[in-house]
Amino acid sequence: MRIYLIASNRGVRLVRANTRAQALNHVASQELTVRVASQDDLVKYLAEGSSVETVVAPDQGKLDLI
Image 1 (cartoon, rainbow, N blue to C red):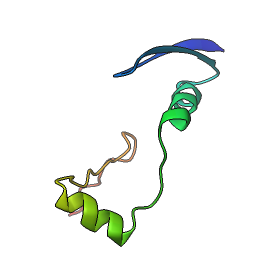
Image 2 (image 1 turned 180 degrees about the horizontal axis):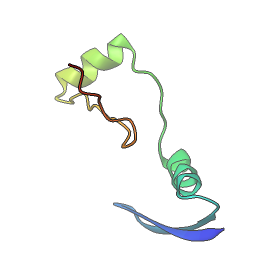
Image 3 (image 1 turned 45 degrees about the vertical axis):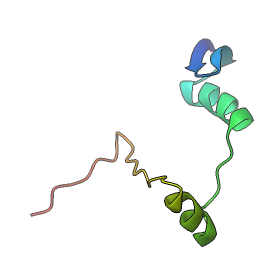
């Protein structure tokens, strides 16, 4: 186990965990919720100026197809 330092706008937290992902998940699960956006969510938040962000995991880059 290691002690990980997780910093955010709310401050710093020290978390003892086996992996970085476990430490981050521990903190995130206490502060965030995640679910699939409904059509109503999309209409509401896009109208309010939010944009859709696209994430590709570092080890899953796009392949150049010829």
